[in-house]
Length: 387
Image (tube, rainbow, N blue to C red; front, side, top):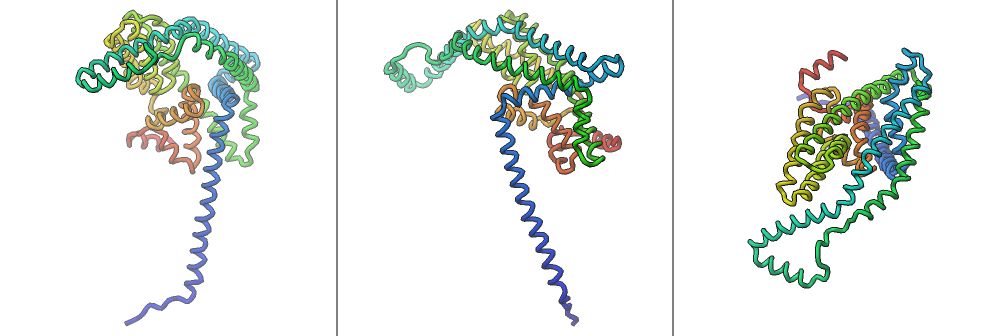
């Protein structure tokens, strides 16, 4: 029988190979740790510097949306970019002022009625407790004993009042006004510079391939965000008109205000619709004094948002910008945790830009795949052929 002889040079070859693998493994671990530490510090900085970062993010977002208008006016109409930028910024300012002027009065009335709305909710809760208590005699006796020992009487759950809420809102007005002014001024400088932003971006990169890739990514983000925000704004405007009309048809007070709020809240996926339904349900309960009066506006609101979310938005936005529903929900929750309600409005635009960038970077392709919606095999084949 022939025995296989071991090559005496094999240990000298295998040992360095094993050592190389171990070195690569140990070298990759610190890089992952550094990346994790960097992300933690980054999100911590975004949280702490929200008052400065948010106006900058809004200005950059509007710059990406309005830059095509400035370039079109410069190339086709031969208008000086600062003039176009000033007109766009002034128009944005007028829209903001008009929105505040329209909503200030109705929202003040709504805030002043908050105790009445909460009292109506408390009455319904107490009624439900009494109905459940008839089936549980022991619980009735215990609740009566607790109520007899408790000193305060009346609806203790009503802890909000109109003046206190208005005073807290008044304290935020100067800060909000300063943030809006800063964002508009910064937006003017970004738009008036024309293509200087992209030129500086290209000049900061060393390789020609990196310059072309950065320019491609920037233009695609600009195009997709402009298309997405324009389409979603039109959809939400139509939804606001429909909901305002439905609330007016059932004689719900301040129906136009609910239409405007539906328009604004629908920029927040999922959670915005839930907040709108809770609001109309609360007002309906306070006005009619019974649960059936709250169910009708909630059901109408739910029907309108369901038609919009399941039919209109997929058709008008298209599959190109379709994203993973779970990823959208996580993004809304995360940026809401970082920046509050404003972060919820910014979650989807940030997600769109991140998905586009991840699609061009080899190491981030799994992230782009996770953020994208599920595609049919035929769609993926068509995309591959197109590329």
